[in-house]
View 1: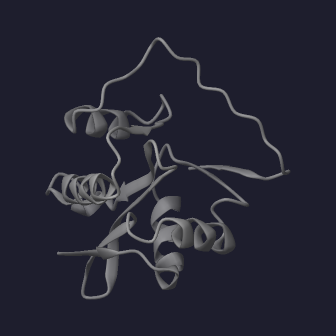
View 2: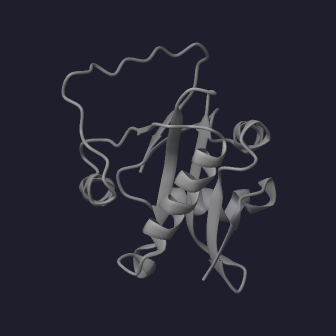
Length: 146
């Protein structure tokens, strides 16, 4: 297994990987090739893929706003789960965020995504029940639930 920085050339394989993940939420704008290219341009040091022989079987997107780090769209193909790939990706992203001067990292997982919630709990991420997560769509987009 090789972990390396994600590039826009990885988009098609990574997007297919996301579509195969049960419980992930995507959308037609932010997760389009153009949307991911914009994210990678802003966060070139903190997004990673796991591959073997040019097959991508894991991915994590992370970024920061200069104050907090955020993790998005983490997935490992089912055949590779439970073998340390997700932990290796998470650790690599956390180290990259730390190197950017980030001291705290947040992420959002749908409550229906039990696999994801269990994984992040094992990684030391705690659930917050003192917050209300809110968002507002500025541009019309299509929601894609996997």
